[in-house]
Image (cartoon, rainbow, N blue to C red; front, side):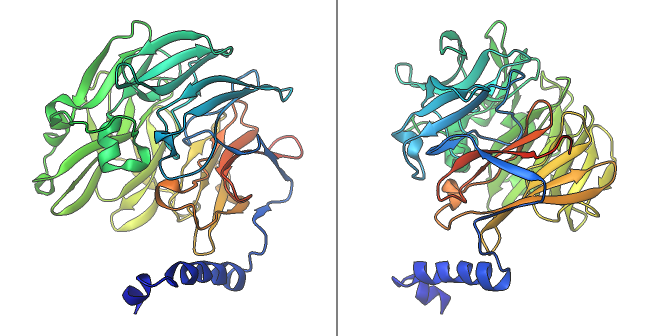
Length: 410
């Protein structure tokens, strides 16, 4: 019956009614957003505006904010619409400082403040003249400082180096995170593609871990005939190790591993595989929190780099996949959830010393935000740890918000 209905004009309306019934009848959600007592929500700008992924802060230590503005929302709007890089200062003054032509709805253009400075801005872009993706550095006035020959995926906190991957491969295998300006591209051989290192002082870059290298790291029979990729690179706080997900899709299905390595690609270690591994964050230089499946159970688990130490956090963490990150003082963790049947996304604050969890807010995501167009909250901390930034479409359009307490402290 479901298959028959899917091919009728009634199917979209029936789908909407299903979500609406669950929202209003089963869960009783009548408003588009709910906040916990003592919390305040601030809209950063009007129109379609967003920042990007969950492990990068849009704010510098001066209180200046970076975000992207676009004209409209379609699944691959980046093909026709450059994202306007906007800066907003503490006084509320806003100005355009640049435009990015390589971006997506999930990670933006990897926009960020570079290193510990307060006036250098890094982002990914498309160079039409050279027909290649690059990364650029500008100042707060939009003046050009540097262009690097590859787009970044994660940057060392000190701004010394960045790690890169092939966004054309992601466009093929995981389009949510890919760029689409280049057409009819031919992917490199696995021995010539993988994770790249850029020295941000000299601009030199080199391949440090190829896909071929990763295939040889404890090979699996499931890799036969499979296509491989890497994604979600995250460098640890001190910059001496990084983690990433190695994924492959083939005749036997979809598989993945959580891997760590040195910045030069040496000493790679498989921390978890080949079961489901989703979003991760560094808790410190050696500990990683991951939502994954471990020994048949799904939840949040803490892994220790280079050691076979795994601890379950399932007892006090939400049992749903989300985007975790730790506060600057190491006392709090924030994570979110995907929209449920009611289309409500939740934002959770976890007090780590007390192992207590607070739902700080719930936000309705309209049904049209699905697949590549989906709106994940992707929470990220301010540098002082007193505020959170996240994206939501509960107003009817994708926008960036700041959440903070109405009194001092958490």
